[in-house]
Each structure stands twice: as C-alpha cells, then as structure tokens.
Length: 427
Image 1: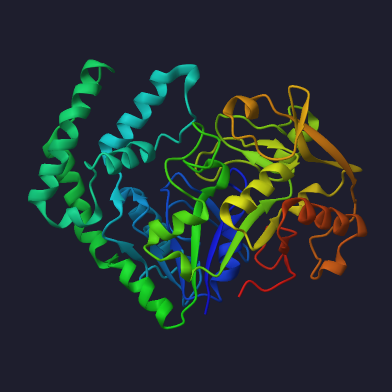
Image 2: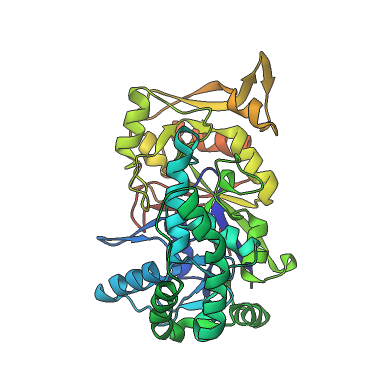
C-alpha cells in the first residue's frame, strides 16, 4: 500500500486539513513531519468545526493513528491544551504518538522569538511569535531540548543551562530583558513529562514497520511550499522544510517508500505575514475574496492577504515537490465573478518570465501577467461530479490543471467534509 505526502502548493492555508481529513478514513497513519503550532488546519465534520494547530488532522478520524514526527517542534502546553479540548468534545486522542526525538519549544524560545521580531521593526519577518524559529535554531546549534530529555532531569538541566548561557546574555545586554532562571525552566518542563509520556514512541520504527506491513501512511506538511526554508521566498519563510523531501527527514522514512505527492492548491492565492506576493489585491476583489473565503489565519488570527491564482508558483511547486496530483480547494469562493484573472507569467524589468525567478530581487519586482477566464454564477456547493459543475467552472479547473503541470484529482466546492468532487483516487 502507498505512502503519500500531502502538502501546501502555495504559501500555506490552502485547506490541507480538509484534504487530510478526507483521506484520513482510508489511511492507517497521519504524520506531521515539520513545523509546530504555527500551522493551522480547520476541519469541518458535520456541523462541528475543529481548529487544529499542532496535532495531525488524522486525529479526527477513528481508526487512524496520528503521529508527530521527529521533524516537528512541540510546545507541551499547546499540545496538552489541544488534546484536552478535543477530549472535552468527545474525540478519542489515545492513539497519538510523539517522536522522542522531536524538539521542545521552551519558554525562552518563545521569549526570544517575540523580542527579536519587535527589535527588527520594519524589517520583521512576520513570525507567529510562538518560538518556532528559535527552537529550530537551537536544534541546528545542537543546544536543543528533545522530548526524550524530559525523562532525564540531569541531562535536561545541563541542556537548559547551556542554552541559557548565551540567551541570557542576549536578553539582558541586547534587549534589556530580565534573565531567565534555569531552575524555573527545568521545573516547568518536568511538569509536562508525566502527562506526555503515554504518547512518546520510537515513531521512526513504528512508521517503517507499518509500511512493511502494507499499511497506508499519509505525511502531512504544516505549511506551504513557498514557505520552505530552502525553496520558499526567503527570508520570509518558516524554519523547516514543508516540501516533500521534508517528509523523509522529518519522519525517518526513505524516499523510495513515497508513492504519491499531493499538492493542495487554493483556487486563488493567499498569504499570511510579510514578503513578496505578485498577485496580491488591494481593491474590492481582494476584500471579497477575504470575506467570502473566510480568510483569517487559524493560528495567527490575522487577515490573510488575498490575490488571484498564480500559475507560476503552482508550476514551481510541481517541480520542487515532484507532485503527482493536485487537490483544488475553495473553487466555490470564485462563484459570482464575470471574469476571473489568472496569473500565467510575470513581467520583470520589461521581460516576460514564465518560471519562478531564483533571484529574490527579481521576484520582489515581479508584476503579474494575467489571462482572463470566464466566470460562473451558479451555486456549485452541491456538485458531486465534475460534470455537475457549470461549463465555465469546468474550463477554469482544466486551465489551472494545464498551467500547473499535474492533474487535479479532487476539487473542494464547500467547507463541509462531503463537499468535495473526487476525480481520481489518491490511493
């Protein structure tokens, strides 16, 4: 049976939660392989809406084992709060597994994140302020705290001391903040140990054994392709690899075991935070997309920047991820426009460019070249097959598929779990 990667093909917020949830009933494991509680997934089940930040979306699918892989950074307080909230709503969370090698977001990581972003002023990146970047920095600098460290007080204390030796110097002398006490941090982290212990496992072993037993494993990216630390719009990116290759390192599964890579595309484009965005709208159309699409960040609570569909970044996502399929979401939001612009290329210094420029400067100055496609006015939320869609909606989907370079195998026509048209099976 296959191992699938499901990830955002734009700047995130494409509707990965719904896609993962739809597949969740058919898969045995759903694995978060990067990011932390800076991600946000909204999943609608019946008349119930769930906002997930750290937990894999598969936690809402009975019979599915949700896994937090080694590539994720975990805020224990957020984890326990999210679990508690789901338990109160009757969701069984007992099958959750957490890698002992996942890194812990400590209180000082959150503090450093917030003060650094404020210090940058107008040069700020637009982080969520949840300590994600500083935690990944500690990981690379080899002063990070891992989940397994919560079960050895001596090692935990030594690691916190090593991390705070430098951070307290920065906090007190550069940012004029109070030093953080080692004992206070250790005590807080040890307070989480017993509560988290039932979930901690060797997830690399679990997942590889599952694949050897022909189980279906779905790897779920937390952010979008254009936020990848290596392949995104650097420096306005996240601190990990949500692209398909990140699934291998972030979960400990070899690339030869991945059989499908599914990119989630919104029928238009959105972005949260700072950074270039060629098709961004500042007019009534942008406001309409934001209002109709409910474009507010699940985790950040910030309004998303909205723009028309960008085929250039869709092609780029196909290339860097090796996408085999697209899941097109929020097609229903475009209902009512007489004509819908689609960005097919950029103009940069008078030149037409059809591929994503590698230069940050060029991308910053890129202007969209639009092709106008006819819109539709019919309600599409009840469509069950592709043929049920209005002809112009069908033509829009086919045009996006041709421009993007991979088949569109599913289409979201509404927020509900059942408001999806399945064209080709992902399994």
